Image 1 (cartoon, rainbow, N blue to C red):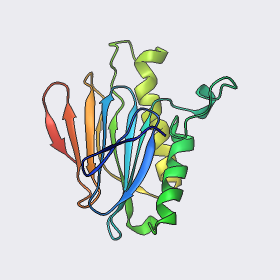
Image 2: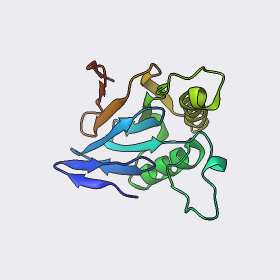
Image 3: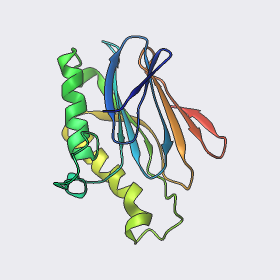
Image 4: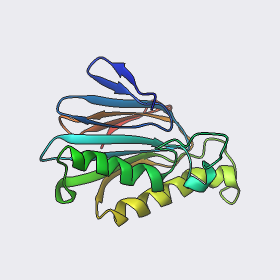
Length: 169
């Protein structure tokens, strides 16, 4: 993992995941077709973020390249939740918020590059539901990039789109 310490928290890179507690900030930028998943246990103030670039681990399983733990939803999300559980998070008080899945290349939806964001998003939703977690908010799709800032202390996820729009999940 290549997360970088920033004032009050951590900056995640593509393919990273990280768990934090209390009044910490998790941040990632450059979110285009990738999907960022933020998990938050509201009772224990434990949160985690994954910046996921591929829809399935089969696309990142190459013997020449070490696997990224957050390379795909099927790897990233069970691991992220297990790491949160080790710190005390529980299913009944943990929810998810998602951002990204943009069509950054303006490609038709029926081609791989035009559909990759939607594929990652669909897989992420399936894994989240398989973990018996609920999704409380989303900022997904469209042709804009995003940056995501997750405040573990409040559970708020602040999204800034490249078109200047700002929203809070």
